[in-house]
Amino acid sequence: MTVDIKKMRFEDLGAVVELENELFSPPWSYNSFVTELNSELRSCLVAVDRGKVIGYAIGAMFYDEVHIMSIGVTTNYQRSSVATKLMVELLNYAYYNNSNRVLLEVRASNKPAIALYTKFGFAPVGVRKKYYTHPVEDALVLIAEGINDNDYKLRFESIKDKLRVN
Image 1 (cartoon, helix red, strand yellow):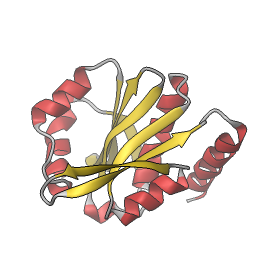
Image 2: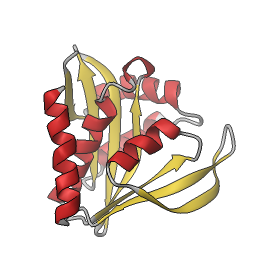
Image 3: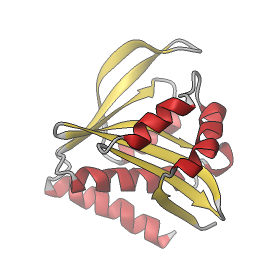
Image 4: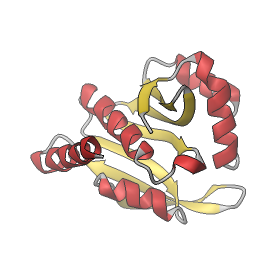
């Protein structure tokens, strides 16, 4: 498996929306992805294996922080470092934009995603009650603070080093 992370293009949207429908309820609409892709303050990425879109991620710049809006990897590729590669690129986007923190919301029951985010130094700072629907569920608000601090940069470099080994 050779996974490449690339900028999302309009030609990718059909596959991205199909993946979104597979993974999330309720899913984002095609037009929601178009809006994100048209914004200059977004990093829209796809993970591609042998020409097929197998994952995507969207990061949004808000003032001095990056908000991870959405990240998803097709079921057959989960737990194979694809989400880690997407996260690395979103963090690179944060560094490029001089952000010092990154935040996201995650379903409270999504233990694999929470484990991924914890690996990247995200910690819970709050709960959004009934944030998700279908099924109704709380969201944990997670933040990685001080991403420009030496300790965080060492963590980030360690993650990238492990990706190079695999």
